[in-house]
Amino acid sequence: MFLQAGAQNDTSKAFVKISGEVTKPLTLSLDDLATMKHSTVMVKGRDGKEHSYSGIPVQRLLELAGVTTGNDLRGENLAKYLLVKCADGYEIVFSLAEIDNSFTDRIALLADAYEDKPIAGEKGPFQLAVPGEKKPARSCFQVTELIIKFAKG
Ligand SMILES: Nc1nc2c(c(=O)[nH]1)N[C@H]1C(S)=C(S)[C@@H](COP(=O)(O)O)O[C@H]1N2
Ligand SMILES: [Mo]
Image (cartoon, rainbow, N blue to C red; front, side, top):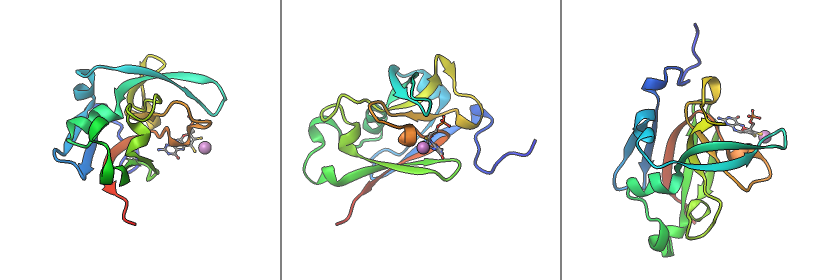
């Protein structure tokens, strides 16, 4: 079968890299995520209906990588952002405050399950699940990298 370049079809070899302005760069597999405490969020799809995703809060993953979160997310760190890259070249950003539970109750997840099943095929195995948005444009699928950067003014 012909595989799209970068597509993560063999899920045992799928990883999400966390890099950039971090003190501990990480490479996480599905097995790594499976050992972590999961949360569930509801995300409105293109069909206008709410769908459930289960995964690890992005904030938690950034903490593991040594990114400033919670009480430490202040001052110049508020100019940092998260760039999310996907296997198809799609990219989206969040400011760190948008995904931090000291600023918001909308907890974005790096999801490994959609409606209680692993995310198979073109959308998986890792998907961002962003609750509280009017459209799913930032709930990107086939996530491959989370990169922390400084916005330079
Ligand atoms: N990797 C990736 N994720 C993506 C997109 C994309 O092009 N690539 N499109 C986004 C947009 S604009 C929408 S509306 C939803 C569509 O998701 P659906 O195909 O499940 O309806 O996926 C979002 N996530
Ligand atoms: Mo969209």
